[in-house]
Image 1 (tube, one colour):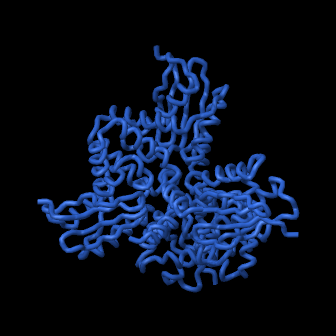
Image 2 (cartoon, each protein chain N blue to C red):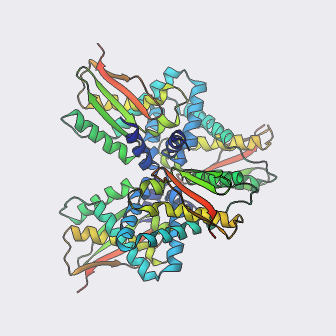
Image 3 (cartoon, rainbow over the protein chains, first blue to last red):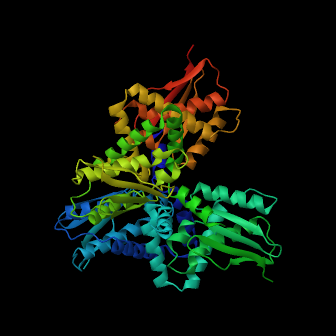
Length: 152
Length: 152
Length: 152
Length: 152
């Protein structure tokens, strides 16, 4: 068996059997009923609400923020994140998110839920208004990538 | 401990930990952003898509239809259904649906997903156009009730 | 539908579909291969190991101990506990444990895993050697009851 | 992030959060209390019971047997199998089994549960008494490999 078959199985299995059908049906409905940009905005708002319902403790460093975020993600079997400070920008890579893996063929908005979560968490942690989070290059079923950088 | 505490625990536990936060955030967003009737219609359409993605085999009786539906529900840990032919109408009771239990305080549309599923399954099974399915009385966190009756 | 059917569904659904078959097969094998007292001891030792792998923070009161325990249980969808100080003894009631519910017809050792967990947690919290934990009366599929009392 | 980190996350996430702690504690207890060969035999017997509780329909070909087995595995989020007829032997590769992935560092018996399952399913399908199933080479956290060949 190829490594790719193994990965496909893990991608599916990492997503609760109970919700796969519901989430896929929801994604199909959104795809047919709404422009992709609207679905992306909706998903980001859902992510912001998720972040407010799962507030992180106050932290002093990017590393501590990533640790706190990973405690939330481990608690809900939602993969894990790594945050890297690149000086002028922060690169956020979220691995093995079940929604991203499940909806990889349903459009780019499969990454917008996590985008909303991280935006709200960074805002809450004191992110300057001149910064914002946006999708980064190279996303895949397994990795959702975002970049936090100056936008104005 | 009271029986009600036990039930509350089971209601929560019957819903995958992985998706509780996402689904609750989605429900909050819908509640704030859309009229309840619109959310109900959206959920019903998602249910119809779920039904088409999980087609039932052709059956000869209401009892066989319920059996086929319960095979789908057992496969995704989504409770179970009983259908009773009352002569002029069919009463459909769905027990222990995780979405209904989770969203019981988010409005009546928590029952609309299953309404869409059953409508599509009955249509596919040859339900006359003069019949339709509508929510029945006495729904709760544990029981979603629908009635199939002549509407025209 | 009766309340008892609802409960039966929740008992099943509260236990991950992935592990039901494995755990039931394991229980059948133990029932045939080992005396019940041996299985109970094995389950209690497994519980003690689970407790050591999930240590509770130091606490000052029984209420705080119950809170800390419930944080562990919520994190693994394993029901919840209430602890009541009755003066000469402490009554521990654990609700909605998936192993207890799943194995209710496989013998009394379905409660021994949690017995081991609580014994180890109380020992770690400084329980006097003259005290011990034993199964209390009135256990059921939904409630596992233990009593902590002087044994020597 | 490396592909290996992604895989580690998927291996963990593919195993229900509810049972990870219990199964790991059980594995530790077995490792300390029993010789490895005894645990392997116990796991194989549990697998045989699982197989009897999940009987496959009668089939006419190896391909149909694999299909039937995969319907069982998909239903419990337990990975998937491929069976290849090599003339003098059949090679069975099971991918993404949660027990194998979880217990990869607990000894070779992490593959014995599935060995028992396949032995019972092949026996039930009419495997000649002169054949038997044994672990094949090259097993890993992701692939459990077995070979069905003449043993006498």
